[in-house]
Image: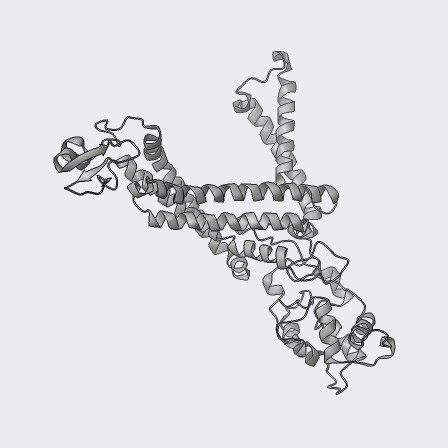
Length: 448
């Protein structure tokens, strides 16, 4: 997913080209799909795109076989040709309209495959987190923690987990069924093959499922987000559609007031009048100014903004935080490792086993174990383990996953979320050295 974030400009540029491709195919739709679908002009009309080729006309086909099904604007003729005992199509396509119809369908499918490809990393990531997410670093935080169990202000992670599960299933079903449809278009490549029953079912059922799944996911997510915004109005500002609706409502109200002398009727085409468009433009500018002001005031530490193509929430900052003070964390780790009834407060050293149990409890145990963290924290190289003084220095340096200096919290709250800010699991000393000046010194929670 980090690769998609890093190269977002490239993917956006390619998406712009894809949009231009959609516009080009829109021209073909106007001249090809409409005649095919609506049958206007009628099939066989001379001099039009629905006029059949010479080798598809009845006069020629009757000389090479028997016609069992007449051709239509959507389908070539069928029959038995050249003494064959198997019924088949007279040709893969018989009119220019059928040919361009197939080009349009294939082109749209290929372009939407790219659009569906972009959000796959994000959708797989949030699906994995929704069903198999890491334990929260603070047991009191049931919501609002990112992929690594750290508190975040990204709105997505504040949605109820049941809603996130439903949404992620639908989103992943959407792209998966789209690519099934894409494969079926490759298998049933020609126009005639796509008009067979199995071809139509293979191409259209997955495609419709993809559209319905995506829309359903959007509806569920929008509803869940509005509930969270209503519960925390000072934390998560409303989205842009709220202000657009407000601008439209105010414009309609002002237009009605200005045309009251006409009996209060708006008319069926009032929305196209110059007076209404002028009012709508003014209201839109006013509401947008309110929206921008609200976003600048709260958006930086609120829901942030998501990347429209990939779906990745880019702006919800993951804040630096302190779960417990250094002494309290040390006592907890020693007490948890020593077992119930241990005199944790009097302990002077922490063993590797105790550190491992502490990290496992808070969901921060690296794949390769706690040895690297233990070695980085035990700067005195004491054979008895990590001393309390070394422990405090390790926390101050950000070497212990889930801990940071309290002084770094304020500056880190303004950092933009980035995969680069939280490198993958590595020896703690190298992670601390890799942090650039000004960045939060939060130690990353390695993936489990």
